[in-house]
Length: 580
Image (cartoon, rainbow, N blue to C red):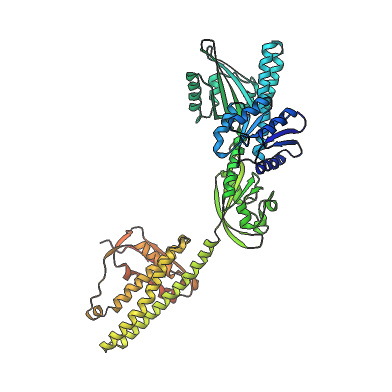
């Protein structure tokens, strides 16, 4: 083969042909030549005129389709590695061609520069290996004197393709293996005597039963086997293997040996995982970045560009400081989040403020996820930024809403004070009382119902923090308590007959006291007074009584205490006087 890879592409779709040409240029810059044909017959003519290193062929052509297309090319050039192109729905067809002699197949829509480079290199090397194995077998039959040289060539081919071979003689339970199999197991060739049983000991504990079952099933049914599994090497690292095996029988069909190969496909697995991750990230609306172990950015998705306005070239090789106006990010080596991720090797999340290319401020929830290598160390870092700017704004709006609600309660209290004054002034006249109560009933209940109603609406907001919900619940409870008091005051018949009743219902004392503290805390903060409470452990959590009246008493007491205190603090202490 010349220095350049000579490729024949048989593809009738011009767009697909151009796309493959682009990917090949990315994969093999200035190291390949390509001839193209859009009909099978044109491709066969080119084959008869030139020598090609690889053939890439679409199975669906204007003058041929399906397996017949592959067979025609294979019959004309079985000395050349063939890569088949299939659609998503024709994956089974691709597998069938590999069984009939194709080196590999690629699915349209999933092709990129990495996959096509891997497939071309794999096909050439696999073809070389198969050809070398075939040549070696032929030479062994013709000339046993060349056995050592051919074994060395085979070992070199195995090393190049990371394929180790082994042979298990069932009759005497002897086991032989190639040097490359030792290297795959992280052993020096001949370091230990490998047996079938000791070889199985390297199989990952979670895969071992399945491997043994597959081999035993193959022996029982006298058919080849192929599967993938994990091994744990001498140094404790985990690798992925692709295992294949054949049975050798005598003329009577009795099994003499099992021969097999084990190829290290760990790197291929990693690439597939990264490709799957990239595929998911591309479709994500969130900003996704992939960084190396040092935290330096290697890749960003379209969501990153849409959110922040920066492209990969703007941040590649950096820690993303441009998003923080030069400050550290969670990927920076000196940042605590990066240190925790490297130390604990577990995902973590945090909130931070970033800036887009046009200077717009964004609050994001950043999630860092480590990808580990076969030794359990961090190999890559995936960072996902979710825009939470709206939630942050909602928190600010909640603070404003709390202030409005507090002001409304204040106005309600003022209105209640006016109600008491007006009542005393019109006690002499029943008509005046009735008129007054009728007016005040509407004027006070209406704003109080509005306060409680709007508080309920705010509580249904999903963006609320737990602290915000706690404040709104305090407002709601105080409003409901106030409405009960107003109803009692406005119930003229109860006032006349002195029949206001005290309830005796179960309530949680700690919850009631906590609500009073939350309600009065803004006033305490305003006067720079510390507000706290304590409840003796001997006091039961649930008590019987009138929580509304108790709440009213505590609010009045604490309110007066804050009002007439200019420094220090106010504390609610609940102690046991006696146990009835």
